Image (cartoon, rainbow, N blue to C red; front, side):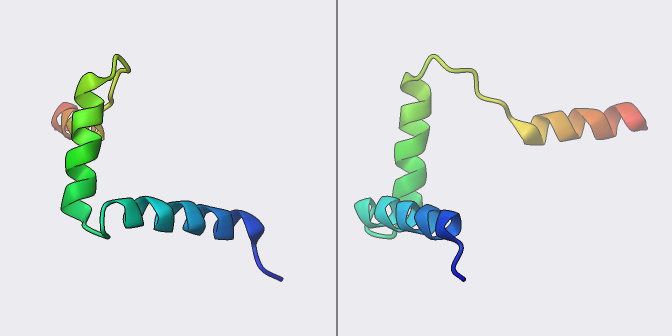
Length: 57
């Protein structure tokens, strides 16, 4: 039995990758530009983890 949800996620991933010629750098560049134009709050988990490690010391 094939997992239909996983297959759908893979199809979406493949379509997105194809739009950027399977170039991760081009995709990241696009996403960062989109992030700058967005009014949504972006969470930096690396900063959160660093702060938690620092507080634990």
